[in-house]
Length: 329
Image (cartoon, rainbow, N blue to C red; front, side, top):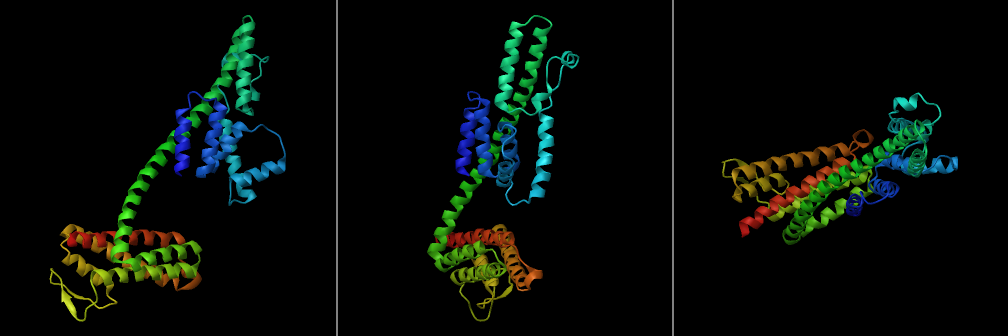
């Protein structure tokens, strides 16, 4: 994604000095890299002349719209073609509408180089002609300009919107990467067993099947248990926290043990309450999804649900371990 971002910025920096065809080819390359299949089709259509091998065209479409059947591709392309033709429909001056000698309907199908060639041709004809033909040729050249400027504007809009989107994504990646380095250092220092288990979860998720998802969720529970063993080792008998609430701190009561640690860490009421609520939520989420995954086909847990759980768990573990660092320092 970083590479695509750099290409986008370069294309925008060179936008005013590059030929339109070259710019659209750059946009086509970027659209392929980021998976914008609709824009891949649009930019390709702006550049690719009509005709050629039907078999190649079909394979080309399948390469653009991966994962779709031929019928689904045809529906998608029909919709895109309709919109593309609307963009190719110029506003025709009345003087041209009343004159049958200068063609304008061919503009619908022409690629960028043809439109540019047409413009040069009609402008040259205008310079050499006398009125009223001179004005008509000039007006006809204006039709090509309309379409070329629409292509230019659409391409520029796509690149600027993509730059904004990727710039935000890049900023968020930097924030998460900084957080990740901190959390990983905490895990390596205080709970190396939990760090190893996170790596195991990642491998399980990549397998993307019911059994692997179930195992990943089970490992999430074990991560919470490993962190609880580090922050608040199991104890026999109940203990009272600062609010006077009696809590069981036995080994299987890892949520209680983590909440008890928070209470004793002097994290502050607001922070402790927030982390405690997240703990309860994630603990319940892990248990619920794990129970669901045990029900077979009718209780299938998808990969996205497991990934969201792991992300939330990872951030939570970072907050918990940060409290240990604060209390230690």
